[in-house]
Amino acid sequence: MKRLIPILTGALMLAFAASPLLAQHPRGGGASGGAGNSGATGTAMHGASGEHGNGGGSGNGNASTKSATASSPTTVLTKNTKLDTHLTSLLQSKGLLPKGTDLKDACAGFKNLGQCVAAIHVSHNLDIPFACLSADMTGTAPASGSTCPAGTGSSKMTLGKSIQTLSPNATSKTEEKTATKQANDDINEAENSSKSST
Image 1: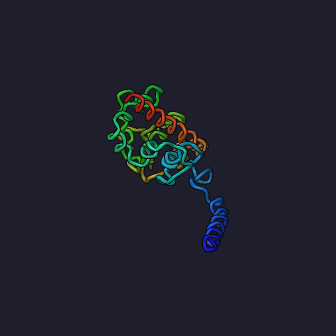
Image 2: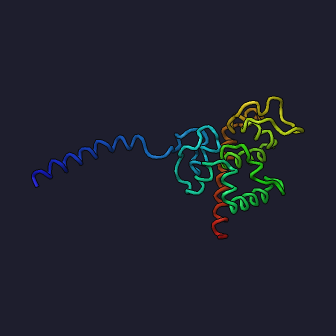
Image 3: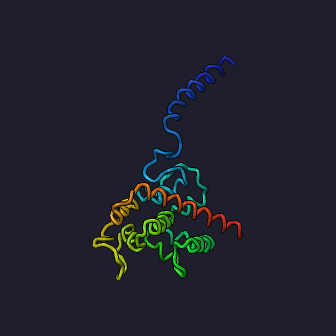
């Protein structure tokens, strides 16, 4: 018993010493996680902004949304045909995606699904041609016949930077945050619909 007391005392002292360190660096990104991280689905938020890759965010999103935003949209939608069907239908019902549009094709070249759906929302919210946003965010030349400004797609940009370039009078951070939340909500709704239809 006498040997056990110093061991327990040492363990307690170690636990108390570590607790202030844990309080200073809580798990998850929280509000300080960077641009676009406003408390909605963590990974999707980072993914949509394009500035922080696929790092963790606030961590309150579900696991399937995190996996949906961590891979290329084509990969995610090809593997999960129910998500593809439900998300495409949802975006079309909201007037965000023209009928007959293949979401996999529309999102080709984007880093993740959240980023693509956020760009679709920005296109609708600010009346910016999606082809121009897509070209800027994927770093590819816009389709011939598009009305994009000269230089569009000449380098890969984040969603916020593309908004600044294509709609200089818009408040890019606010628009990016709004579209990112809309994208997260759409992806979550489509995932829930696809699960309930199983």
